[in-house]
Amino acid sequence: DAVALAASEITLAQHLKQAGYATSLVGKWHLGHKPESLPTRRGFDEYLGIPYSNDMRPVQLFDGEKVIEYPLVQATLTRRYTERALSFIERTRSQPFFLYFAQAMPHKPLAVSEKFYRKSGAGLYGDVLAELDDSVGQVLAKLKELKLDEQTLVIFTSDNGPWYGGSSGGLRGMKGTSYEGGYRVPCIARWPGRIPKGHVSQQPAVMMDLFATVLKAANVEPPQDRIIDGRDILPLFTSEAPSPHEFVLGHQGDKIATIRDARWKLHVLAANDRKDKLEADGRWLDPRGPDGVTILAPYEQHQPSDYPGLRTGDAAKPMQLFDLQADPGEQRDVAAQHPEVVARLKRLYDGVAK
Image 1 (tube, rainbow, N blue to C red):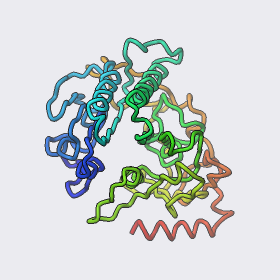
Image 2: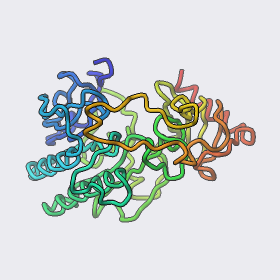
Image 3: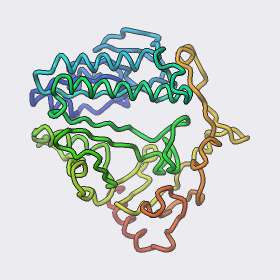
Image 4: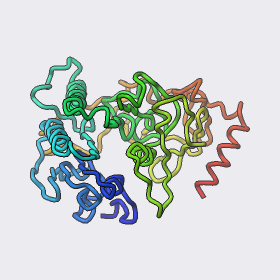
């Protein structure tokens, strides 16, 4: 299990469990699939889900450490995940709880339940999003029904930008690239009475910040035996506070590719525009052909031409600088106009990347 989470790391679930929280993971894990690496060995009291992505064979559904379905009928997945999440909230209503709810959709292969199939008017992708929206609504309704909504911090976010079929909201690039379309995702926080309704922050934050943020919200002290790289971003949810980070790094594969602050972004390495995944005629090439699993969960293949912002702007090369305030779509390289910014960000990059 070479890609498993290192045993020396501590998960949020492990730390909260020590503080008396009930813990559950519903959905994607992707931090190791062997028994010693499964969520039940890393702080979660219970687990229902796929131990990696839903396009990685064999696609098996686990309950705890037992495979309960193979091949998995993915059209039922969103509904079953939602039912387990609601059950966990109901069963642990009288104690503090932590629920990590990682839906498989809209990761490809797309699949939707019969209730939502062909109902959105926006194709299979639209159907999938409608069911996901309904799932979130059911969770919020359950918290309100149990009078737990004002005691519960809910955070909705994503792990990366879209694949073909999704939208990057006008940003350049997609999942697998170091452009903002690959990195930038929504982060929506809800905590009635604590987080102002309609508040928006444009400050940069990173997924690792959620570790420190959740502990702060729970009034749980962080681990004292290690450095916690993330920062508490509750102030970003509640006020006009600046980012707690002087800079944020971005990866491309296993390399640090970019560094940015609140305004500027330096591509130290040339961005990947995914030309290696295209046929000679410019059409998208999926190296993984359909199999018995993907036939059960049909997906739509969109083409690069469907996304005019995917590969526009100045051609990718090393040491490009973009002004994200004026040009969030990363169209115009302004490195030549701002050499002092390039030098400052490169010094910070070198201090970390050594």
